[in-house]
Length: 262
Image 1 (cartoon, rainbow, N blue to C red):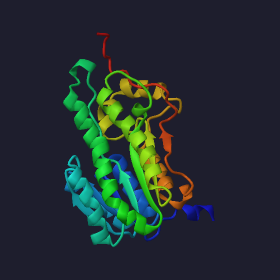
Image 2: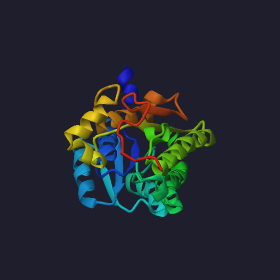
Image 3: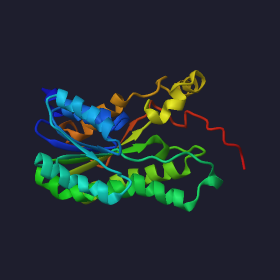
């Protein structure tokens, strides 16, 4: 059965930024497909709620509250997975982000911070995970990039640069780690998470975003979780170094930040 290729029974996954939104949805999806999951973010209360959903799917959850902007804290998750759940097969690097800002308000430290949070922490965890992923025999790394790493829009200099770097990091890491570990990324479009609360609670802004998206809607975290499962599972066994677009079809930013010409 083709659906069997989406099963990851007995595997162990680590998901960062897993307290809510895309990370939470991905962690639950992996559990529903058969994996035990290590979940980490800053807020323990949110993680406990996600853990209860993982356990409701009949799988084990290991909650690790941590400030994942620290690469050392991110790297530690690999050992926590191996020690706590016995192995590590899947890494989902979901942590990341950066606030929009006009060009002249974007200082070099903003770029440095965005790169560390989106790329350096990803590398720290992936590097620490590699020995365990090699032992797994079918290790998979899934990085969450963004459509803004592929298209241009005003106000996204730090965020877009970091996500573009993450996309190319994925291609390079895939070559370095082939053939025993696969590394792929998802270019995520506009998704209804807490980051879009301002948009989703405004009829005007939400309508604008929907109108400028070819599929006519804002994405749902489960849309991304389904792609994570595909890239983490044997269903994508012949895929590495790929940037999978899950963005509603947009080719330009679907929300105008209103930044004027200099």
